[in-house]
Length: 277
Image (cartoon, rainbow, N blue to C red; front, side, top):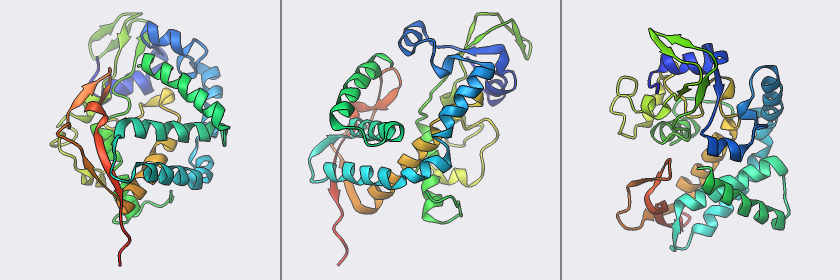
C-alpha cells in the first residue's frame, strides 16, 4: 500500500507501464475484461480518446442548461420540509445527469429500467471558464475541491506489477497488487495542515504536486471528472442560494459499504428560500 505522492506518481504516471490496472476478482467479473479500465497501450489510448471526447469541458458545456434544470427539479422535489435521504437523492441526481450526458433525453420507461439494473450492479459493485479569485465561482470551486479532498470519490486504486519492480530499495514482485491510497495522502498533515478541518481556503494556494488526486492520476484517471465537478457546482449553486435545510437527528457519523458514506444517508429536511421583500 502506497501513501506518498511520489510513490503514487511512480505507479500511476512515470512507470505506469510496469503496472497493469486490476480489481478484486468479483469486481473484475462484473465489469468484464473489455472495460476501458483493464486495457493498456495504444488500444487504451484510442478508446480513452473516444470516451473523453464526449466528456471534455467543451463538450459538456452545452449540457449546462439541462443539468441546471435537473438540479432545480431535484431540489424542488426535496422542498416542503419532509425528511429525505440526502445520500440516496444525490446518487439519483448524479445518475440522471450521467444518463442524460450519454443518451440524451431517454424515454422514461427505459430510464427507469436502466436505473433498476444499475442499482443492482451498484450494490454488488461496491460553468464559467474563468477562475477569478474572490468571485462566487472561485469560492465554489474551492465547497468542491475541499469536499473532494475530505471525502475522496476514489479512496484508492488497484494495480498489479507486470514484472519485478524496484522502488526506493523495495522489490515489488511480479503479480503483487499495489494500492495507491489517495485518501491517506489527502488526510496527511504533511501535505494538508489540520486535515480533519473543512477549510476551502487551503486551495487558494495550489497543493503540492501529486498530493491531490480525487479522480486518480495518470492515463487511467477517471475520464468523467469534469462532468462530476460541473454537476456538483450547478447543484451547490442552487442549493445555497435558493434553499435552506437542517439535518434530522444527530446522525452525523460515517458508515462503510465498503467506501465511507454518510450514516443512514444523512436524513435532512429542505425548504425553498422565500424571495426577499
